[in-house]
Image 1 (tube, rainbow, N blue to C red):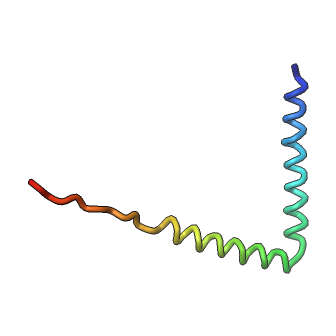
Image 2 (cartoon, helix red, strand yellow; image 1 turned 120 degrees about the vertical axis):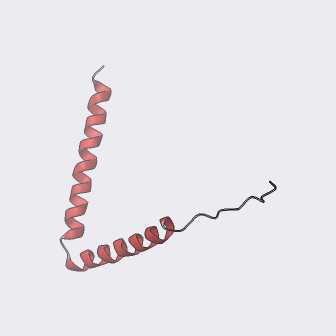
Image 3 (tube, rainbow, N blue to C red; image 1 turned 120 degrees about the horizontal axis):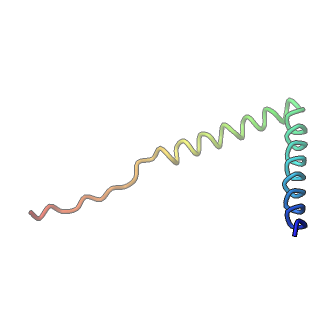
Length: 64
């Protein structure tokens, strides 16, 4: 009964270890840090413009 819980815990633990190792490797090099910063700036700009757009509103004709 505890076997699926152990597998789930092991998967979560390994995902954290691998993700942490990838972050350490990516942030240990200055050139990679600059590339990540540029990528983050591009994503920030694209999300900012996409979410700040006003929705199209259609006005209904006034028949009253």
